[in-house]
Length: 162
Image (tube, rainbow, N blue to C red):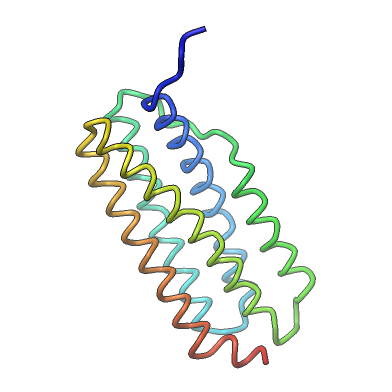
């Protein structure tokens, strides 16, 4: 059996995040619908639109690499999204719902930030400059979303839950 290398790991991880983004894209409208706070709902709707662009960027990266854009089941994102569904079920119609949704959304963002940061570094190491630029663009969006969610938690949602 041939030894696997960083390039194969890079492509496998791209497949992982591609799958994750598609699952996130499906989950965000449900989270927006469940949110009580108009600000939180708007944040989920905005990120839904951004996620569409992030999926398109990933497809462009696959194209640059000459690989088909295919996802690979990501157990990590499945678990994080399942926790979000649990919160929606267990805390529906409570003052803590939005705080729980926000925490679940930030868990997703932190996972994405970790993945995109790693992929960007690997793309640079492998000489995939165009892919690195696209990954950096998405990484910046994910960090901005996480920051916006943190500010929303501090300014409104956590106080309403208390």
